Image: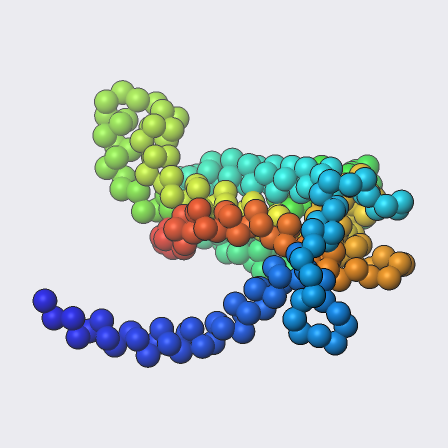
Length: 277
């Protein structure tokens, strides 16, 4: 077997390793700082300590919420957003892929245009709408807003995955006497499982890292999520504890790291759908 082509990638691997080294060192020092104390002006830690992780076990200081209700809020926010986005995208994407609706291409273009608007440009209008509907400063209001902002991309992605499913599969089911719903549920959905999984993970991660919407639309402590909790930690009136800030940041990032390690292939599949009009 000719192994010479394999040696061609070594220069690329070496270059990528060199470029990635600063990031690796940065994350290494981040982890080290969460379990050590360092004297000001020194590069090396002085002693090992778990003091910076006390927020997981001890009662929080006056004026600061416990981390666990905030974590529960974050999981509820991310999970609900992901579930609603997937459910609506599954049906809307199928309709756009299979039904010959009037103004279909215009509607698809409008979906992408809606997704192109940055959240910050819509925040005032969204704020006023939530106030009028009585959903301001509630977690459900933030969930609905985040879902609406994520739906255009979710519908477009699922439409692309449905486009890759051959018509013959559905025609065979209909010929055998199955209803359109049965064909969709039992024959079509299994063909787009990678897209469903990838979209669910993608929308979950998008909601998990969201900061602007919870900060502006649900500023009370009862509706806090980890992103706003982390920001409030460093903006406290007291002297900032940067090691505590790093520990909370690492705690916040751990679920994302775990999800990426376990599901990284499915996350990459989100770009595998077709793009037919």
